[in-house]
Image: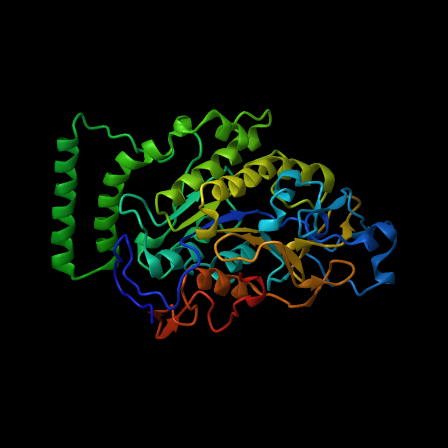
Length: 440
């Protein structure tokens, strides 16, 4: 088993269960739940029966707000792209150019229709608060390849998701495995610039803290919080030299900065573009798991209970160009094969309106996609019904997503465990199957 109590080395010393395809993961978290039928799962029947009563065609399950309107056709057009001919909405012209790298999973499901529980489920494999995030599980198993950087980094675009920082927490794992939150603009980490006049003085202060921590540990006995505090002080000291240099994107070419949209008129595009560029730089330096959160577009996250067209267009405008650039940049640098990119929200949206012009939460069938890192590009996996409402073929669960992510990193999800509460805990609990159909 990949089992270890206490702290891991920064480089990780767990043996892999099988050869890894990916060394790191970039998780593009689409907070709020993008609509599958408006993005990557076209359903012409919605346009054909737009404005009609959905109950005339199928049984309408209870929704979050039960303010159900008529069948709602998509405001956007779908076109086939690439050699694979996968259909992508006009919301994503830049991502569409990369479609031959994507494995589009159209049959994802969730057990929860409410944001907070669904976010915990997406991030931790449990709808309960306090479990380790998938980023924490990855660093617990593999560590970081760079001793001067955390193994799990969250790039904060400006929106804290429902569920809060527990979405990125370490749960019952040691505190060294929790996500380190960085800002894409300004000072990336609070107090990253030393206040001491000399490195020697700062070093002496750190050594004093270590002495006090060691004395506390010797008095009370070995304790993960104390051990983690010692390790985190050391890591923070090293990060003060590493982070400013890593976050200085002025060394990137003007072409690269333009490609990511850092000169875009729309500020949310610039924010997410910087996140994507920093994500590439982080995995380039050996960070195992990087999660990106969405910027504030002034229209709410991807949670359009009303004003679907305005809200989805604002969110897509923020992320489309940067994501397309990230995939292209990784490929150009020879990094896409070793970097798994995952695009997902916590659930999808209904094929009928909430009120007049929104969509409610739909956990019964929605779309995510993966690219690079051992994934078979140009692939469609699974299927929803003709309305885009329920998964009907190759139904996937969050545990399957987590099992597949770990598999591509060389980890058997059934063997990556941690003893807690009298049982061997794992990210996938007692569930999960690797999605063999999307593996290269």
